[in-house]
Figure 1 (cartoon, rainbow, N blue to C red):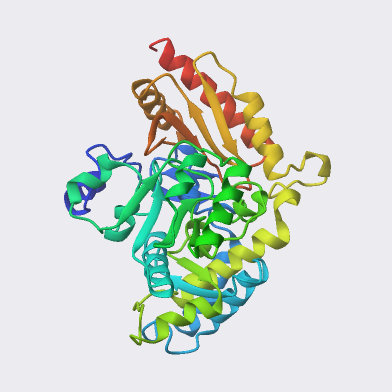
Figure 2 (figure 1 turned 90 degrees about the vertical axis):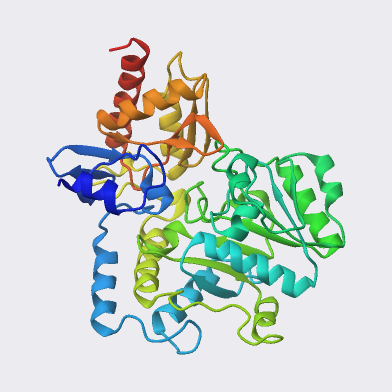
Length: 412
């Protein structure tokens, strides 16, 4: 049997038509399959590989940590230096009130932990989320997912969940003294990159403060420079009570976290003791890789000053994240494109319907562009390359994408 046949037979599938590429190598913004064909990565492992594939600093950190130790004991019982160092470093780049990190295995688990923490701290049961929101696929995270199509097959789910309309001022009236927390993406990613109205998100923050409701911001996809600032919430002048991060957090290895104040986090330590536990959460190898990747990001490619990975002698060719986004917006001009929504290098290219988008997505893969669509916006194509994508790579990607659209439209 071929590897593809073995893959379909023995690896549990999540769809009836997986992309199915057999990738054997990846570096920077590019991947190569078993036949040597090159692909541009426009997904970044769903915003995991923000600093690109196979970064040598991350590989070195992984190798060094593996040579010392891997798993020691259940999370939180033994002082493991990679966890301590990463937690300390993360909090140095966050507001003072976000000074305590609970590492998890994934973004979904970060959502679960934050929901428990909010209910425990406030002694309330109601949790509010938003329509067309995505926070993971585990049972609790699924309960607050903002689309009934994805929830319905798994009911009954958690009770006392309310879904509001994003960017709707009237919806804020639903937040009361019985609401434990609001869980929301700072920028709605799977809805097709929907940014918040600055006045609305500030009003939401104020309503949470007034009612004693914890504001949980999900930056699992939008964190680590993806939107042009280290954290998307910085662009709106607010601070969450709990922050969810993941994806790029581990530098390519599995890692998530929910972050709050030390005072709030302490409520997980009593009544009952071990209020939230996990065997592999905050794995030392993942933390070592994540810390190395984070240091590369903030030291070498810091946000508005982020440059191409190898600008060479011509420093004028260096681009910030937002300049790269603007260049893509400028180059993606075609009558079939209805709109392009962006927040930094998280971009949604909108077409007239889901059918056309799917055809273009499949043709892109055939033509060497790995991309896909959004869960709640299937008529939109995802463009979210590693942040280190160069000017020349942007030009090549955009030319290839426009040519692919032409190919599909003309039925070639």
